[in-house]
Amino acid sequence: MSTADDKNRAVAAAILPLVGGARNIESVAHCMTRLRLGLRDRSLVQDGALRALPAVLGVVEDDTYQIVLGPGTVARVSPEFEALVAEGRGHSAEDLAAAGARIRESRKAANATPLKQLLRRIANIFVPLIPALIGCGIIAGLNGLLINLHWLPSVTPALAAIASGFMALIAVFVGFNTAKEFGGTPILGGAVAAIIVFPGVAKIDAFGQSLSPGQGGVLGALGAAVLAVYVEKWCRRWVPESLDVLVTPTLTVLISGLVTVFGLMYVAGEVSEAIGEAATWLLGHAGAFAGFVLGGLFLPLVMLGLHQALIPIHTTLIEQQGYTVLLPILAMAGAGQVGAAAAVYVRLSRNGSIRRTVRSALPAGLLGVGEPLIYGVSLPLGRPFVTACVGGAFGGGFVGLFNMLGVQVGSTAIGPSGWALFPLLQGNRGLAETIAVYAGGLLVGYATGFAATYFFGFGRALLTEWNVGPVTPSNARRSRPRSDEDDSHVPTPA
Image (cartoon, rainbow, N blue to C red; front, top):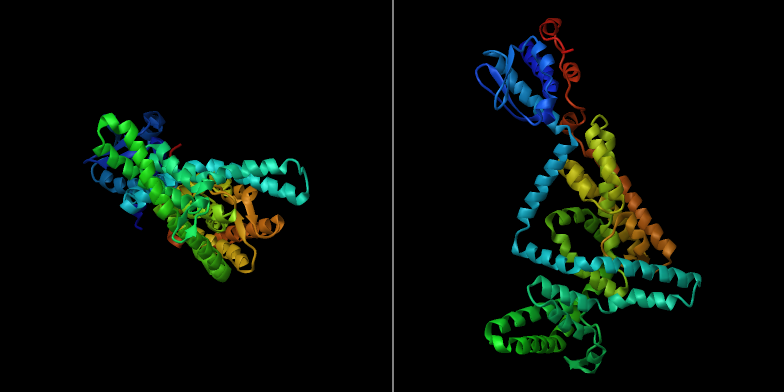
């Protein structure tokens, strides 16, 4: 860089802190003689110190704050000033958050496809059920612990009833929420779905075999309620208003109910059973590979909104086996994210703004709430998001490996992950062994996410751009050497 470029850079670096720094600049422009600045907060400008700079010929306030530098000079100082403003903005956690928000909005726009809108609707059906799943799951875990320890034998039957009551009727709640989500009458959706769990269905033969109460589970309830919505809407169009209150609900429940008991329950039951068998076979025969793939791809699935398709699968597995073996594996994606964020904290040792963001978001990340770290740190940086996925892959592979070895690690509810999943853990072995495998997976995810990000998450350009503090005249001068002659002409402001 030439001496003249150094001089212009130094002038820009001297002006920037006196007008409130990069975060105070909304716009930069120049005319023949003046640097014109749009400011967020006029009170941050130090007029006296600014006028005292030798390069500044005067200051004019109009719709913009105008610094008179003279013809020729302003055209050379302006691009240097713009570069410093861009660097200063890029060095803050606020810009990472803004970049993350832009990514989130772009993903939201990209998710407006028929398939993803359908998945979002499915999520809207099941997400309201998560608090009850969590509460009942924790009670079930507590009850199992008391039974194993032979404590409070008179209380455990009551706890079993409390924990199991919701799951016994979950199909009704799914039917209610489904009808509500698809624009029907919620109670009619619940009424049709209730047929699935009614004990009297055992007297009905369909496809050459007797039905079982609960056959088809949440998938059957989902299909039955959707059918009820379409039947109801058809009735609203064709039934006279004078008869609507009597005919529409009757036909809705009758038609949908008959299709449910003589078709949907059997089909949904076969699908549900296939899901359970497929999950068991996959993790039993290719657990390490399956865990590696699932753990590594879960963060991108969340970004794309495709993770919502897994909610009915989790719920089906919980209905069948008492726990879902997929959630602990998918939770390893959060562990990789935590490890990656810790590496970002270490590598960007000079960037206090981003380090503060990491410190504030890490506790939530440890408890399984990963959005602050994803959209506030790793995703806007780019490569650390990929290395976070690597951490999740290795953590998922670790848990999947133990599934191959016969140690199933499951969760009795969906929703929490990270450390918050410990109270919901259940498996086919003792609780201590289940907890140990899950904790080991978390540690592998943390360690791999950290190592991958530390060694491969930052290229030289990324470190040069981000591992810096706020732009000031002093560090701007240190970063670009100048001659004694330059310093004599452009002194640092007092």
